[in-house]
Image 1 (cartoon, protein in one colour):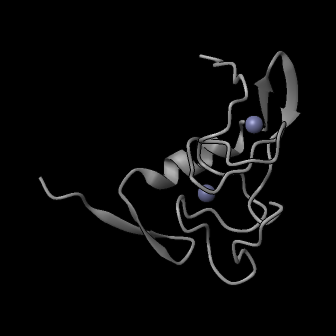
Image 2 (cartoon, helix red, strand yellow):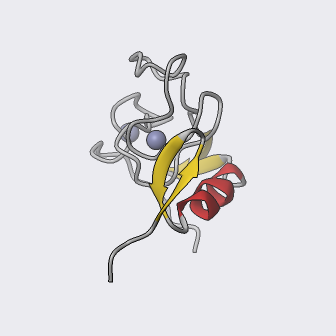
Length: 94
Ligand SMILES: [Zn+2]
Ligand SMILES: [Zn+2]
């Protein structure tokens, strides 16, 4: 079956993705190594990903929104590295 795309934040995303973006907004913190950190919203990363000009290139959130979990762009709140690839000890909350 071909995936369907919908428009969200002015960009094409896979069907069902907007719901993931909305859900991501309610997860405001990550527990890393037993300490709760506020997640880093798009546009507040140390590196400029162009948040003023376009939605996140990976998860399509707009500036100020929290990334969808496992987004490539999300910055680790603990170490400042890419959250997906850093060595921090993320605690799963499910
Ligand atoms: Zn993102
Ligand atoms: Zn980290």
